[in-house]
Image (tube, rainbow, N blue to C red; front, side):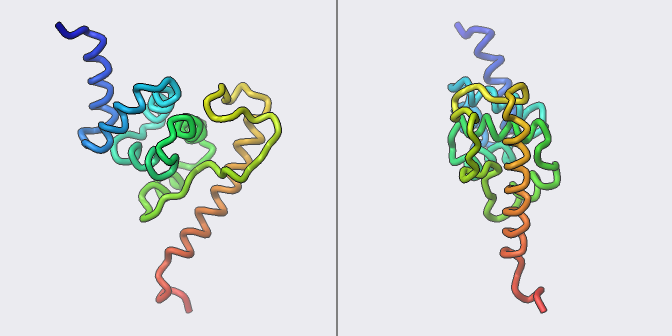
Length: 150
């Protein structure tokens, strides 16, 4: 006999994947990890589902549930504009939202609690926002076909 709780997880998985088999596999995998599950909830709040969710997890977070959770927190708190998020995930080669080269003393490692209540959150957000904007704009101009340059 199936438990009611199992149906709730399956319902959530189907809703978050929007019926896409690749996204469904990612959602089911993320549901096995506390940080992955937290990332899913944050993405749901930010209206990110289906292939968008799949792209963020696989291309922008290297299939790392801890990086996914932190990326989702940055997206949910609107560190990046909705236009920037969409432009990145719909590009041919999306880039990570988080710049791994940014080193700030006091920032917890992935897998440790970190969010808006942390005293270093704003500094971390501002550094990643600036870096992402520069990298996204650079990528946009590099991807632009040469025929458009004079």
